[in-house]
Image (cartoon, rainbow, N blue to C red; front, side, top):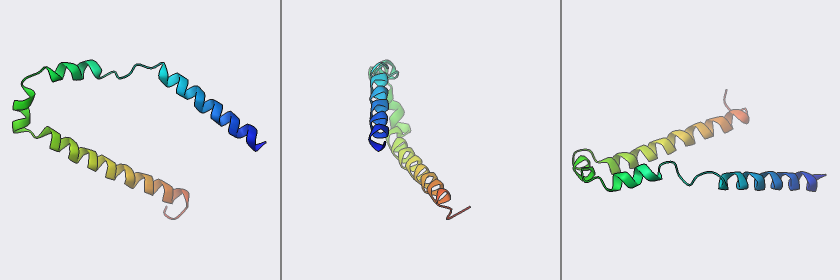
Length: 81
């Protein structure tokens, strides 16, 4: 019984892997290649530190995501309401 359920789960995950291989590599590949040829990106980055802003945004989104994950887990365990 348990082995058939695990086998079914493995087969379903294998089907998902086959589905993802049919998808394109990245829908953003061409726009990123176009931006690499743009000379003005360096001038924009001089006034707006985009790399630093993206780093801060990444940490902020990670912290918010971790907060909601912990909050959801605590609600499931009925620790908080």
